[in-house]
Amino acid sequence: MKTVKIDARGMHYTPLNQKIRAAVADGAEEIILDNILGQRFIGDGLRGNVRIIVNGVPGGDLGMFMSGPTCIVHGNAEHAPGNTMDKGMLVIHGSAGDAVAHSMRGGKVFIKNNIGYRGGIHMKQYDVEARPILVVGGTAHSFLGEYMAGGLVLVLGIGKDKAMTDRGIGSGIHGGEIILRGEVDDFLLGVGAKKFKFTESDLERIAPTIKNFCEQFGYDPAEFLDTNYTKIGPASSRPFASKYVWE
Image 1 (tube, one colour):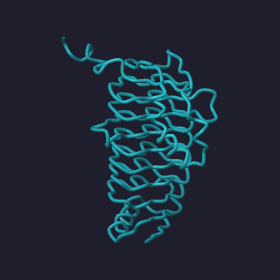
Image 2 (cartoon, rainbow, N blue to C red; image 1 turned 60 degrees about the vertical axis):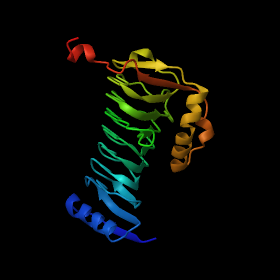
Image 3 (cartoon, rainbow, N blue to C red; image 1 turned 120 degrees about the vertical axis):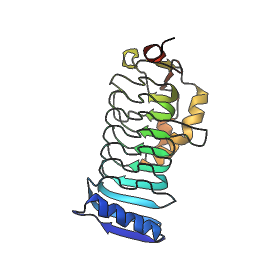
Image 4 (cartoon, rainbow, N blue to C red; image 1 turned 60 degrees about the horizontal axis):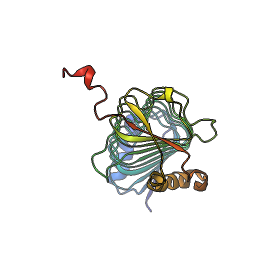
C-alpha cells in the first residue's frame, strides 16, 4: 500500500488540501494527516478508494462532495462533516458539531459520541443504492433530520438514559426515516413527523448498519439487535403545503 504522511502543524487549509490532492493524483492509497487543528474542507470532492487518517480535530465541511474515499478521524470534528457527500465513509472517534451529514445523498457517516443541532438536515435519496446513512452512538440536539427527504438517521443513545431529549425531531420530514433507541416522547416530535411501530422487519433491514457501526468502534452488536427502537417518518409527503401553496 502506498502511504503518504503529512504533518499539518500550523498549516493553512489551502496548501494542506493541495498536498492531499497531489498525493491522490500520485496514486496514494492511504494518507495520514498528523497534527490537524481546525483545517477546513479536508477530503472535499475527492473520488476513488483512498483512505485518509486524520489525527486531530478537522475543521468544517470534512468530506464535502466526497465520492468514494474513507476518512477516519481520531478526535472530534467541527460542523457539517459529510456535507452533500455522495459515496464513501466518515468515521469519527469522538463528537461532531452542527449540521452533520447536511444534504448528504449517499455513503455513511458514523459518529462514536454526540452531534450538535440539525444533524441530517436535508438528507436525500435518489435510489436504493444511493441511500445516505448517519449513525450517532450518543445523542443529538434539536431538529434532528429536519426537512429530511431520504436516507436513514440512527441514534443509539449509548451511555444515555434516553437517545434523544431535544425537541423538533424530524421537523418538515417528507422522506426517509429516523430510528432512535428506546421510547421517544411525543412532544419531542417536530411538525410533520410521526411515530411508527418498529418491527422485526425493520430490525432485519438495519442490522447490517448496526453491525458495521459496531465494527468501527469495538462495540458488541448483540446489545443493539432487538426491537427496542422508535421509528419516525413523515406524516405526509408535503408537510408545509398549506403554508406555502394556495390550494
